Structures are given as structure tokens and as C-alpha cells.
Image 1 (cartoon, each protein chain N blue to C red):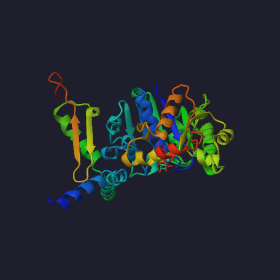
Image 2: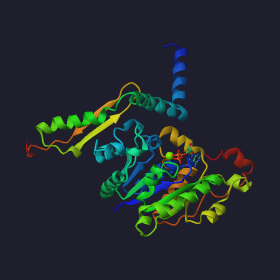
Image 3: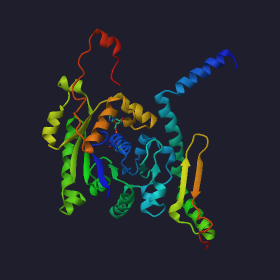
Image 4: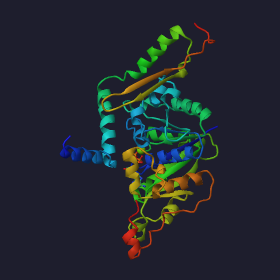
Length: 93
Length: 273
Ligand SMILES: Nc1ncnc2c1ncn2[C@@H]1O[C@H](COP(=O)(O)OP(=O)(O)OP(=O)(O)O)[C@@H](O)[C@H]1O
Ligand SMILES: [Mg+2]
């Protein structure tokens, strides 16, 4: 990295750290996601219901104990589905 | 039994969402289990002000329509223990909210939480009526400005006639005035309604005065409720208001213009954030 580059990245980083830039970054992420979901049906509720249905075919789970955690990002989003399964003493269906 | 508090105003853009976020966070900071519900279906913003917008999976309409469990739609705050957010739907219209649906949600939340805050949309239409219907207490957010004061008076009338408590002839909804965006310097110059004038006209108990403050924009940029900025005048004013709500005596601050600083004060004092 040339010294010129060095200064450029330092400056970009400083700019990115300002409060207003934080606002812009947050908006870009959320608005791009919202624009997508405006054009097609939100599949999350359905996907979650189907996942629970699959799991309940094997184990008796309380649908309340299925937690869907989403973290939207600029380049990638993560979806974590946490299903609390009964222990070995829990009865199988 | 949880206490249901509506944050309402009639007029738009006076600081309901800012106040809901700050108040809910403040109650949780004081160890009260608190959930804040965004009733602004179609124009959700509380998630942004609370900084949880990237984590929204389900919303209040999904819960009402049985597409998700309440538990799954609640977003647990990562900064303050005991604080949860229930987002509004962004894509559905206001008719998706029903009184029965909201009642079910409030009953279920009552089992887990001490306080249920309802961030009302502007206006006196369906969404705003639903937000205040189940209220035990109301925080009426008012700016020192003619149209805001008049609209606050309208909403006080609505609280007295259209809330569940009013309809059932119970003890009326407890009303609290939260005067926000107050600028003591402009009041001193005679450019802005003063606190006493607003109190005289609305004639309800004062919960707090939140000064016009640069820290509010900073807070919304970063998605941290302004009460977390404990150095800022607005943050401190919200913390005082929460304390008063919980029954503490706190003298009102930020209602006098700062005295003119001397030469050194001007040199080193900086300006109020
Ligand atoms: N004390 C304050 N000092 C400076 N700006 C403020 C203050 N309180 C609120 N604001 C600003 O006022 C604007 C409106 O605030 P907010 O979104 O909280 O209002 P609202 O009543 O929820 O609006 P709506 O009726 O659209 O839901 C925002 O830009 C916010 O940053
Ligand atoms: Mg709002």
C-alpha cells in the first residue's frame, strides 16, 4: 500500500465513523431489504411454519419454543432458527 | 398486572417515538420489565430509533393474524436487560390491527412485563384510537407551539371519552404532560410559548420538559435511544421524567435559559449538545 493509499483509507475510515454516516449505512441496509420485500411476499412466516411442521413430525416441540433470529446486513444476512428440543426424557411422537 | 402507557399527541412529528424509545429504555434501566409497541402500522420507525431494524423478523400484524407467536415477534434489546420491542408491520395497512387482536397481545404481555408502552401514530384515527384504547396512563407529548397544544387538547378529550376506561366508567386514564423540544432561550425572547402557558391551557400534571437538543439527532442516527446519552440535556431530562413517573421527586431542569457565560465561560464552555 502506497503512502497515498494509506492516507486515503484513513480518511475514508474517519468519514465512515461519523454519526451521519452511521445513519446512512443503516438506512442503506434496511431500505434495500424493504424494497425487495415490497415486490414479493415475505416468505419468513411461511418458512417458519413449515420448519416447525417438519420438526414436529419427529419431536414433540412447543411451537412457542421456536425462535427465529435475523440479522440483516449489507452483503449478507444471517437467519438463525433455534428450536428447543425436549431432552432424552421428553417423549417422542 | 402490567401498566399500559400510551405515548400520544394528536399532532405528528412532535417526538412520540423519540419519547417512547427513551421512556421504555429508562424504565428498563430502572429494573422494570418493559415492552414498547409500535402502533404506526405502515410507517414503522420505532425499530430505527431503537436501533433494532436489522433484527425485525415478525411484527404485530403477524401475531394478530396467527402467523407468529408473540414470543417470536418480540425483539429483546441487547443493551438493557428486560427491554423488548414489538415492531409494527411495514407492508400491511392499518386495518390489519383489530381491537380484539391488540387486546390479546396486551393480555399476554401483561403476564411477563411490568410496563407496556404504546407508541401511537399521529392523528385521531383508527391507529391512534387503538394505541390509547387499553391505556391506564397517557404521556401526552406536546411542543410549545400552537397547533401542537391544540391537538394535545383534542387527544385529552379522546382519552376521556374513547378509552376503555372511559367506556367502562372506570377511573380515568392518568394524564401526564411531556413538553418536548423546549427552547428556553427562545421562550425568554418571547418567541415561544412558555411552560406555564402550556400548563395553564392544558391543565394536566407535568411529567417533564425535554429541551430541544442536538443529541436527539445524534441518537437517532446511531439507533441509541437518547436516554442512553446520559451526558446530554435531553437524556437527563428523560431520565428525570422516568423517575417522576415512578414516584420520585425531581426538580424540573432545562426550563431556564443558560445564563450568559463570562469571557472564560465562552472560551472554554463550549455549547450545549
Ligand atoms: N428534544 C428534541 N430535540 C431536538 N429534536 C427532537 C427532539 N425531540 C424530537 N426531535 C426530532 O423531531 C422529529 C420527530 O420526532 P419523532 O419521530 O419522535 O416524532 P413522532 O411524534 O413520533 O412523529 P410521528 O407523528 O410521525 O410518529 C425527529 O426528527 C426528532 O429527531
Ligand atoms: Mg412516531
